[in-house]
Amino acid sequence: MSARLRRGRGFTLLELVVVLVILGTLAALVGPRLVGHSSEARMTAAKTQIELFRQGIETFRMHMGRYPTTQEGLEALQVAPANSSNWRGPYLTKGVPKDPWGNAYAYRCPGEQGRDYDLVSFGADAQPGGSGEAADIVSWQ
Image 1 (tube, rainbow, N blue to C red):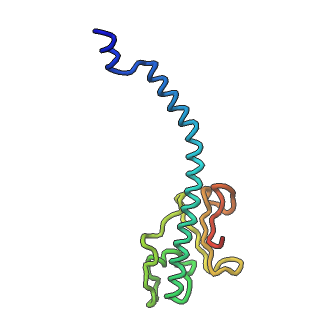
Image 2: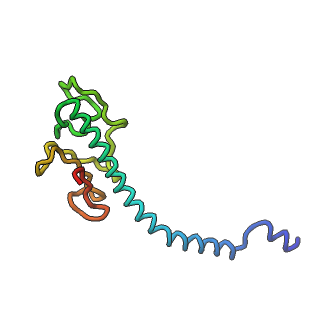
Image 3: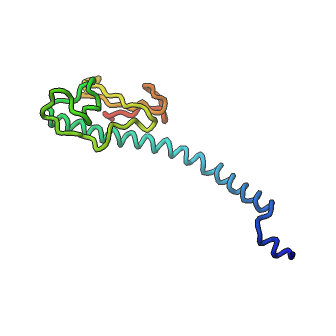
């Protein structure tokens, strides 16, 4: 069998090693950048969800004449609370989602420091405070 026919059947070990080195180098360069964008994307998603909650909460207030209580929570945007004849929801198109890190949003009404309500995602660490991806994402900022 000629060398030409053998060569057409597959890759040599050297060619495979070169391709793997190139792929490894690309992964080492691009991987950290994608991870950084992943955390930014989660924080942006949490801000967007909080804004959607705010719209639902304000519509609830227009119909009901009050904000959902802390006990009713965000579920009041999806399911009518007891004795709520003016409720015209659901005020969210889908159910109440978890934050991008898989934790429940914290809702409190009345809010602290004179706010009508507080709505918070505690970030990646699910604890108050923090910085970077662990920073709190709040409705009043």
